[in-house]
Image (tube, rainbow, N blue to C red; front, side, top):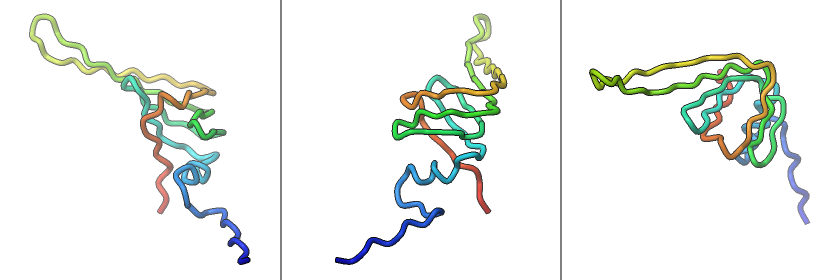
Amino acid sequence: MAEPEPMEEATVREPLDLIRLSLDERIYVKLRGEREIRGRLHAYDQHLNMILGDVEETMTTVEIDDETYEEIIKTQKRTIPFLFVRGDGVILISPPLRS
């Protein structure tokens, strides 16, 4: 029998490998409910539960003006030292840009 090739540290063979390569780096996560977070990825699991540090959360809300019926887009930002993100709320994860 042929021996399987050793897996290289920086190889992406399945989707979670891309997240594994982003450990201890800043990532972007889009969540349900018009929430976005950027933070340093400390840990994750196969359900995409994540622990992030140095987090900046951005929440966007759209309100309709009662008189003019115009959309008013409001953005709130806050910083959080550590955050546990439950995986079922994750829509998208973007690893850091690599050149």
